[in-house]
Image 1 (spheres, rainbow, N blue to C red):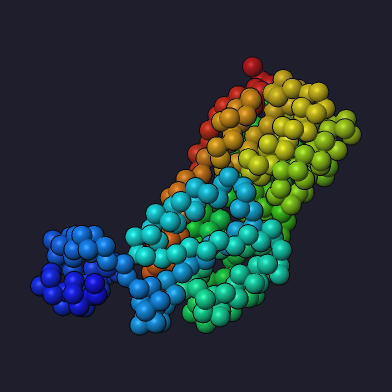
Image 2 (cartoon, rainbow, N blue to C red; image 1 turned 180 degrees about the horizontal axis):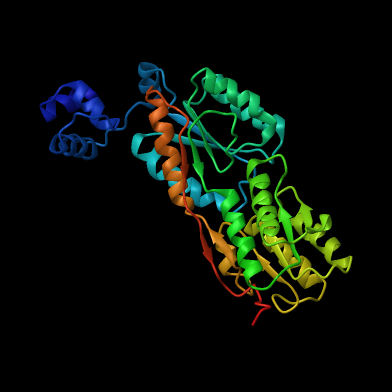
Amino acid sequence: MTIKDIAKMAGVSTATVSRALNGGTGVNEDTKKRILQICNDFGYQPNVIARGLASQKTYTVGVVVADIINSYWPVVFRGIEDVMSQYGYTIVFFNTDYDAQKEHNALQHLRNGRLDGLIISMSNYVTDECMALVNMNYPLVMVGQMLDEVKCPKVGCNNFSSAYTMTEYLLKAGHRKIAHVAGHFETKTGLQRLNGYKTAMQDYGIEIDPSWIISTDYFETNATSKTKALLKEGLDVTALFAANDALAAGCYRAIMELGLRIPEDISVAGHDDIEISSLIHPQLTTMHQQRRKIGQTAACKLLTAMEGHEVKEDIVIVPTTLVERTSVRRLNE
């Protein structure tokens, strides 16, 4: 069974069959259904290699993230796959651990023509390389980490205002000594959420003790050890705001290992609203992100770029919402 056979049976041209199978425009919906039904009835499978040679495409895209184990990403991946699968693309995942060499290697796959495009969440280490790729018109979309210098489409939340909202929530609950378990300082997300926390504290007239800012590498185990070290110093902080929910889980472990209680002894808040936030006890107060929508939007932006359309810097902000659960104690009641 070939495209010519399908075209003959459907009574259309081979070009129409090709557009119908590749998600192209200009094909009548009834005609498309008839073509797809013939393919299904006769078990037609397109030759991906031949298809790629003809179009000079690999029909493969990459998704680059720092920590594939973080529960934030699988839902984003699902959103990307929702869109890409409709157009016959295979997705390759790269895990970098914020390692500059691993990030460089992932970008090289795009430069070497092994991928048609990349959706990336990168550290500041590779800003110049990302800028160079965009200047050479390689299809690139940033998700989460929005490097200001790289003028490509970007999708994510407003990390500054989201962190400000959570910090303000803690302040309105009567907390004044609030520590921030910050993300990686070589990431825009980590810095923006830190600045949101700082600005909220300053707006409420709170002088931040330098020891309240706990720098981590965005991994749970690091958050556990550093939070435990902070609390052992005897500082009477009443609340911890973690830059994401995985870090918040690390805070939970540190607090429990020290024999303290949440929220009676210390309150904890997070960010992202991943699945664990409603499963741990007490349930975690956090900022909800529309992760699947972020993935779908990023995939649509990448498809547009890969079609050869002129792609300008386009920042899509997907709103966050505060989810109030039981991990924060109100001191002013």
